[in-house]
Image 1 (cartoon, helix red, strand yellow):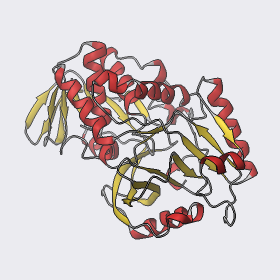
Image 2: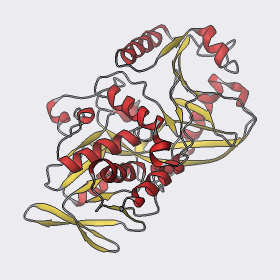
Image 3: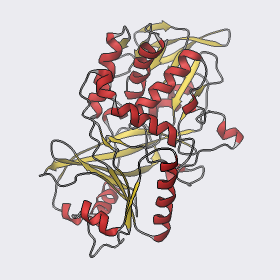
Length: 383
């Protein structure tokens, strides 16, 4: 088998193919170096606080895999279950968070709703007195948190390699080899490689690579920026999200504040964004926690998001025999890494979708069976 994409999802797929299914004759092809794409360009948040049945069990399984990941890989991935708090700022948003929390509990996922006083005790540095968007409470998942993104990639790569998987870096796929209507291999910058099955796990490059196979997918690529500040003393104990906009922040072990916001809003394959989005993200940061106003931003980076038309992922066969798809992760790719690899490996090895990923069919858009987690319809990039 060939897995195209040497990020977290591709390497996790290779690891579980070898460990769970005994398929060790696998090549992972990466056009750059492992983790040079979105795996190294995200805000490292892990959580399973989802609402809909198609998503909730999948992300909860991912969380359980995160909890045992370091033992599984024998590698320190720096998984930190520090908790995540989603702030609410209106009656309607509070009701929506109660609904989501109840749905989580019905699926066996931990969830707590904090009133304003509860949020104040946990996060006293937020603006409770003069906020433009008063904090009315928050949904807390204590098992959520962060993990070290590059350590996750190295851990999966090390474990997969130890089981016989070949990881080929600086090997860009430039085309597909067809025989009798089937895809039987790939053309790369380092020559042809043939295999019985080929899985694509290339995030924001999915539409571009699928076009080489003659596929047009319900995916758009957008750039999503993230930022890190200079190191400061311990300030933020949890992951915090701002409910009146799209802003999220946590503090790294080195003291930097790691934060991000919304997409830049235009189609792009570039791993960099524009200044108006930087301004927007910083304005939202000041709206909820003006205490960080004098902290200096050290750097920013951009990941290429493969935005599906309902905001939920795709793990499925393609209409072309021998070609399989793992894509459409939108904002949620990093936290899905273990379960994505687990389910994609199951699909590649057995040709049947894993029960946790059966809702992630490619044809759901044609049949109207969307998984619209955010309730934004067919334009999740506008959220």
